[in-house]
Length: 379
Image (cartoon, rainbow, N blue to C red; front, side):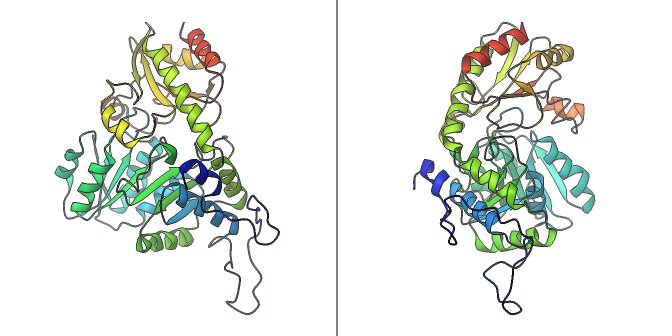
């Protein structure tokens, strides 16, 4: 199947009971058994639920993987990956990443004896200097949150394979519509399905997809043992969102391009970070590994004035000032005081997250209304 068809049919089958086209919401915690251990594939919904299974199959199909796992949030999915590690293991992570990931790494797992190295990965060869006998995992975001840094997944995969390490890629910003990390050599792809996969700002779900059975079995064991699964209603909502992922992403990309170009020509704006610009660092890599450049971008005002940035996001009317991203509606955020507030100021600013930086999740509204809204807020 081509991708646009996969979003609707990939990994899916009509419900065998009544032929329902959409997978039913199996709102049950347990299942009848004819004799102890004899059941129809489901015994308890922490372990398996038919609606969650339908979502996990769809996720695997979208990412060209063999096994999908759905969790209660994106951070729960990341947490499951980190539980593959042991005391003394080391992780190499990009130094520009979602604040929640940074918090999980440094405030939770660091105290359990896992060591993290946060480095710039825009030149993939930088990674090798940090690899030693304790290194077990490379953690990549691309594009990164919120600076839109582009990391070469193929190059990272070659390094990981050479040193027998796991490569995990957070594909939340790009979605499988734009980029498929497993096809580029990654071992694990992670999504906050809350964002573009769900697409309607009405659900919180996380996802992992892998190709290797042994790795999948380890993750399924962790998923069942830790129990951070999503419920059937949540699974249904993400399944419904996936059906329109391809058409939504097409409009997100179109609107994102128009907004980026408008801001880049505005006299009050200093920098615009969007991978589609030819001058954007690693633009050529983005062009090679992505189908398009997405609807996420960040910009900073001239003078790097905190109060000015706050005034802009407070004055927006079509863009909503809110956490999260990837919904049909346009959202604006101030990373330094919102999504990345858990990262110390000095560490933030080293990666470009200035006090005046504003992140936009460009939705699928009429582009003229979005441009007019930015114009009135900035001016």
